[in-house]
Length: 213
Image (cartoon, rainbow, N blue to C red; front, side, top):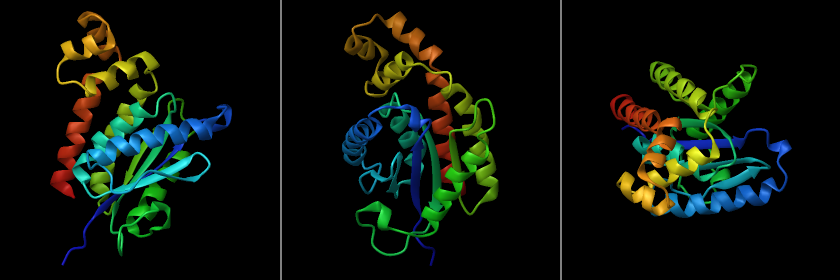
């Protein structure tokens, strides 16, 4: 009998030492993200800060991981994140706090996050990495995110704000109305913020997860 797989997300804040009042900002952003993501059943346990600028959570809905990543990045603005995702087994009951759990998924998430640190010498280093028991899957999905992360590095706060509003509304007309902007301005901000590419990447990774894991 196959064991149930979980997705573990471990993240830290890029250049955290240069930010004043980081703990207060991080805790507030994670409090808001926990409320929203638990309401949508994207995560099983609240986000838990485990070491200064590092935090983690766990999910059982593997196909939603790419959407969770996208929504987490926009909700934690202006903080830039490095995120490691491990997919594997977690023995025992899944109970809070998440940092007291253990298992293959947690070890692989840590390995994924540490792999990003080893690539930090690049001009625009990757910000996202997956680690699973399927090397072929890891190669494909990590390539997708490495390409996407080059776009994420270029995005502005205004573009993230527009993307966040667009995610929360069904139509671009509703997005423009909520932001007090005209539709052409919203469309321009979405295009310059690579909204189409971000959505296409998340949908593609969702299909990969469904097909290979």
